[in-house]
Length: 69
Image 1 (cartoon, one colour):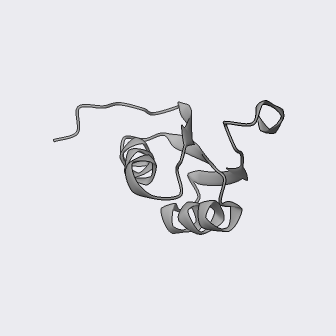
Image 2 (cartoon, rainbow, N blue to C red):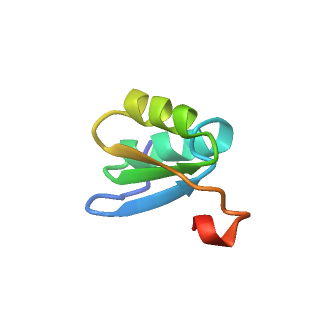
């Protein structure tokens, strides 16, 4: 049962290349939204976005570094 309606919305998911961030991105896409994955691992983020499909994009970002955000 999917009670989340994310149609027409976009989310930035930090740490989205793996683990909990990736799972959250999957759920948001399944709920009709689009996501941008932020992760320090650029290659991992791009691979994750490719596996999620056209509703996902990836950007290399280290949220611990102010200049990166």
